Length: 181
Image 1 (cartoon, rainbow, N blue to C red):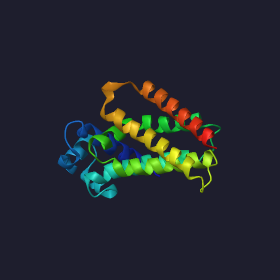
Image 2: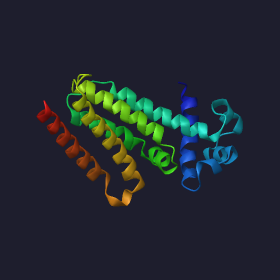
Image 3: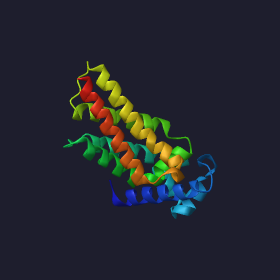
Image 4: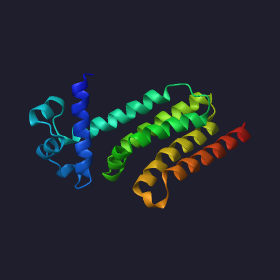
């Protein structure tokens, strides 16, 4: 993609997140978004038709980043989870706004599905092994939803505690899976 297009999209996204700190998505006008981003309305309309398109574009980018990262082979589950954590942490502001504006459920479902598929592939779980699939679905849901909980309740704990707790829970679930076999 052209660097100018990327720059414009990043400026609009950053401006949107700044405005979302002050008001809900549906109350943000194209004019104030363009003013905040220092982008003309004409330029805005080259890329988008409405303000929510900028938000939708962020969701799509985040989902694509995760999907690309999760298609790689990982030497162990910890490395996989670290990669997942890194991507979400790099996009924390946008993910927080998604959660705070009740726009996150579809993305949460997509992220959970991608993480589940990657865990099944990485751990070589067979399609007919329903018990292990249930455990991995539980793990994938737990990891993704723990982010949502943490973002909406940041004062309860810090990010490092969240990551360490996820890691302990993941290893406990993997231990249970070994016992089942």
